[in-house]
Length: 147
Image 1 (tube, rainbow, N blue to C red):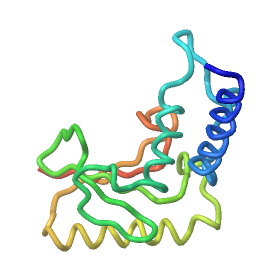
Image 2 (image 1 turned 135 degrees about the vertical axis):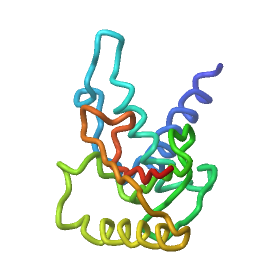
Image 3 (image 1 turned 180 degrees about the vertical axis):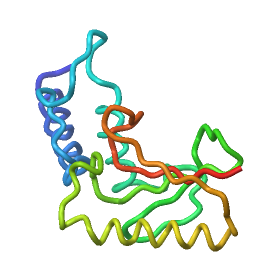
């Protein structure tokens, strides 16, 4: 590979990275937990979830509802007959990191839950949100589950 071509690729990579990761929570290599097996996969998954949910939600399969602030989709590995994921379109890692600026996203998220519950007549459901030590993906999300 020629030297000028490598420089162009490097600059292009920086520009694409800036476009994709703008407005993502800082997850620099210094803040990502490093385990004995390498970087914490949950933090890395959260970073990529942040990009997909906010920049290219069309890549998410089985979307059942989308608003300007929330996306709802079927869980890729459901553990119940009904298992939906509710995700804000703002990079929030967990409930412990909520701020006043997040209120409009939370209101929309719960409005989406009400819409889905009423639309599909779901009763006897469970709503779950895991904290940092229990998340598979370090990105705020809720599970709606029912038999």
